Image: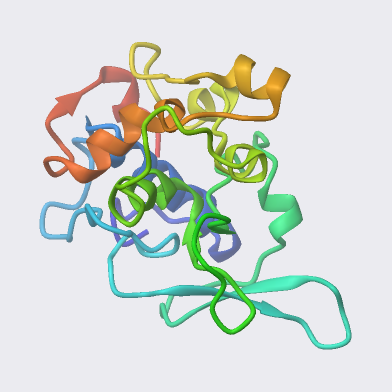
Length: 203
């Protein structure tokens, strides 16, 4: 891992990096990171390396009705979007490219953003939206980061936020308030301002 130097299997990089990204976006300091390494980017961190400058796309596989993530990142790996959508013990992070259903379609498609970066995308690209205006149900579901996933990624209890998760499940809708905490942290000061003992034990 270019962030913590931990030796991990290449296929596990996306989920492992997802943990670093989520903790950074929540302002949780990790003392075991490589001193000379670049920290997680505060804007649009790549899901593979944690740095900016690697736009991600969803490319339709030939003769199939499925899509495969495509990135210019040298650490990019091939993975199943379906499998990545569910948090598991071995692959806890669900950070994967998702489409923004609010963005206008360009050339038949919509903007693609890494899941954990969507709150920042909404808070900047769609800053003109009213805080009380419901988000599309499909986007709410795609953005959801449940409590169990956060716990598996080493997020301390006092930082865990499920927003209006129950409300979204019942009504099929959610508001920007659902992701307000992470949006504020992701667009604010760089990571590393808050520290947790439990975060030190995870990566």
